[in-house]
Image 1 (tube, rainbow, N blue to C red):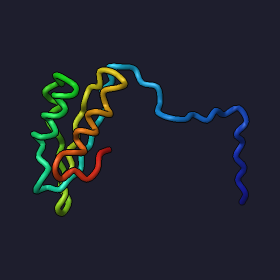
Image 2 (image 1 turned 90 degrees about the vertical axis):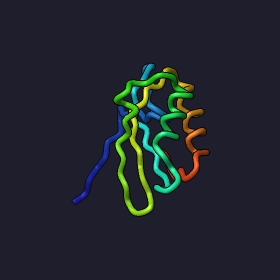
Image 3 (image 1 turned 90 degrees about the horizontal axis):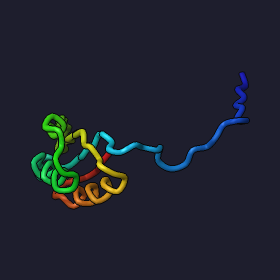
Image 4 (image 1 turned 135 degrees about the vertical axis):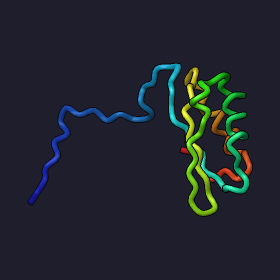
Length: 99
C-alpha cells in the first residue's frame, strides 16, 4: 500500500504559536528529590511573575526513583516574562530539566 501526502495549500508555521497575554501556562520542574524543594520554586515564581492564584501555586508532585517533578500553572503577564524565570529556576540546586 502506498500513501501519498498532498501539501498544496498548506502553510508551514515556524517558531512558537501566537499567544495572548496574560497567558496561563503549565510549568514542570524536574530535579533531585533530596535537593529540590517546592518552596524554592514558588519563591522564584512570585519574585519573577508577581502574585499568582493560590491554587496555581499548589504544585502537583510526582516521584520516580531519586527524582521529583513539580507541575505548576503560572500566569505570564507578557512575552518577556518566561525566560528570566526559567533561567532562575535552572540555577536552583538539584534542577535537572524543565518542561
